[in-house]
Structure formats: structure tokens, C-alpha cells
Image (cartoon, rainbow, N blue to C red; front, side):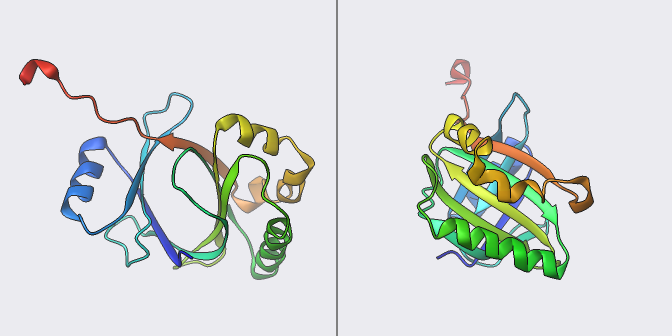
Length: 170
């Protein structure tokens, strides 16, 4: 099981430089869905962060087998201590059953520097499988956390396509 996960955002050039400078690390490069140009780099090496972003998370629970491919859903929110315990219990209850069709993994992360800042990261075979779950009764335990009171926001990503090289300079 993964114990920590770090992430950062940046341009393709910046993120590629980080990857090249750290060949001993296992990284996953993601591109935002929906036409946004945002790129995110995950360090899934289970080591101290090499990023300066301070987006370093403890893996509170991991369900399924993350293959680090496919469609990624990040749900960010801030909870007080009691709400955090309830949330973690609800995730564990859901994870005690088989994961929804198409979900390969579900991870609950909390920020090292502020344990009340949570991320529910789910990894899917496809965006279609995610959308079916998102509209199903199995998602309903999470809807109460998706409020402005909890500073909720969500983002979806997919594997970043390989960088296109300019063939005219070959």
C-alpha cells in the first residue's frame, strides 16, 4: 500500500525537467479533461516529495489496485476532525463492498500539513464508468461533502498524451 503521494502542477517543460532530474522516482503525468491545458504530475514513489508545491498527502486508505492509468477524479474538501472521521468511515464502508464497475482504485488522502484537507482520488477505466458512478446511489454518501462550506472542488484528469516532437528539426 502507498503511504504518501505528492503532486504538483506546471508546464510540460517544467514537469519533464522534474522527471528527468529524478530518474529513481515513479511519476504519472496527467492532463486535465474538458479542454483545459492544465498538467499535473503525481509522484507515486512513496518517498519524501521532490516538489516545492507542498501538495504532499498521507494515504489514509487505499482500496482496489491502482494501475495509474485511465481516468482520474480528484475531489478536494476541508473537514473538521469529527466530519473527517465520519467521512473515512463512510469510505471504508463503501470499500468493504466490491468497487463500482470500472473503478480500479479509491484513495483517501489528507494533507500532511493540514490533516483536515482531504482528497478523494478515484481511478477509472474510463470517464463513462466514472459518470455512471457519479450519478448512482453509491455516490450519495459523498454528496454531503460537496458543498462550499467544505471548500469543495473537483477536477478530472487523464493520462497526458506523449509530447509531439517537431519532425522538421530531425
